[in-house]
Image (cartoon, rainbow, N blue to C red; front, side, top):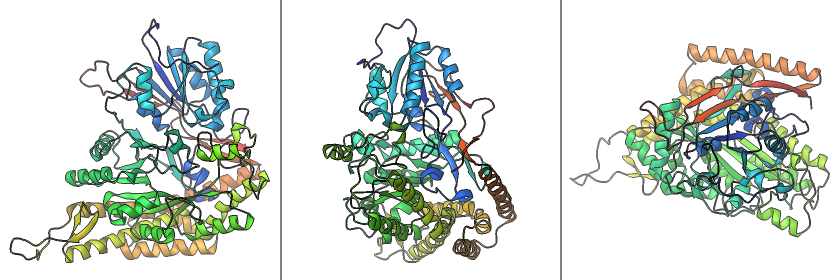
Length: 613
């Protein structure tokens, strides 16, 4: 069923038009096309703050890679994000020559339905598949398609449409969450996403991202100035100064991060970033650099206390995490359950060890060998891979391989779920931990700034550290060192971050799961008052609103669960049109994103009712 076509050819009677689509919804509902468990379109509630109930932030992210692709080809393109089946089929009637669909392995049956429909109703449309789902070895026997996007997508798509593959990457302003809510209160999403590069040189044997790009890193934003310019564009068009950088190991190119800081300093732009980074790179650049750069949160793979991975070997992870938090940097530690050395006792100890690291957030996932990874190849060579339906390849259910010690699928689900519950019961709501990190970091940053000013310490971008100010012309250090204007602006940003999260503390105290969590919330409120003083009226109102909406959310959830139902959030549908880079534009048009809108009647996320747990 697959074709070896690698370019669209020249036989089309009409100009090329491309539709880029995510798989159709609803999501997180078990049906003939997908599973419920592990397939919700929510990063936090699904795999980081899972089992935290009303305390879990709720948000979904747009399919950001599609927007980057659409902004970098001359073919007029429409991005259809989170479509319903009707949205998808109606859009196909609008005269497209090509349809590209991005998907992950568990959603392959949704793609099968989408492509079968195209073949039957629009046989002239060429089908392009992309995303991690394309690693399925027998995809040819399941799905009809004309081409598969391999490697880095922008350059592949340009080659497919016979365009210049060496042209600079045009990074559009990509909005962050599709929606966001906390304690039942929905607020306007803020933030933006930066796609600075793909792949990772660390090459962890389980990492599909690393192996998809042959253990190499491919930058999309080559320099710090490129990253900075993408920030400036997003600030201008979206009004945001906070960014999630989608890059497996952003700091692995420290010179780029250094140049980014220099650009921000030069232009007095104290942007804020959430990043992914390995432990050895954090140790290399140092926490002072991260604070100055504006890192609000860092996602670190700790993996196992056995330290079988080079990126963590020889590093005191607990000390590193504590240092990051003391400087106001929220830490999400990710770990893998059911590695080969995990018998039942060691698995329980591993979970306790990860929780004991004290990170604000923890992602627990089951060991999952995806095709193309070294883990998959090794298990296949050992004849240990099981025949598990692709719809279950999501890392939160049955293992895909025979484990040396634990092989009951019910245990695979139970251990993972109980790990999240144990983290919640031990440390309380993650939002309280995040609030404590924010206020402690702001307090310390103020003290550190005063100390450096008093002792004439200035930032040295070459050494990534603060050093004594060089003597003046008379051989004496300046008696009145100049203030660090950029760090003063960074302090104001840190204060704002702390104030923004302060409003959750009253609701966290009121709805605490246990006495320990309630005391922690009370300590956080006391610390905030000692550092920032009493909350102003606006903050008091916000806290009261969250308490009321939180109570309502608990009652609503309890009612539906009593009726045997549960609630799964559904993201809105968004349609975005791109002009095509080479089309002649009028003076008031942008070279991308001509039109972006939520489809009528779907301006916010919906709540679908599903059978309860």
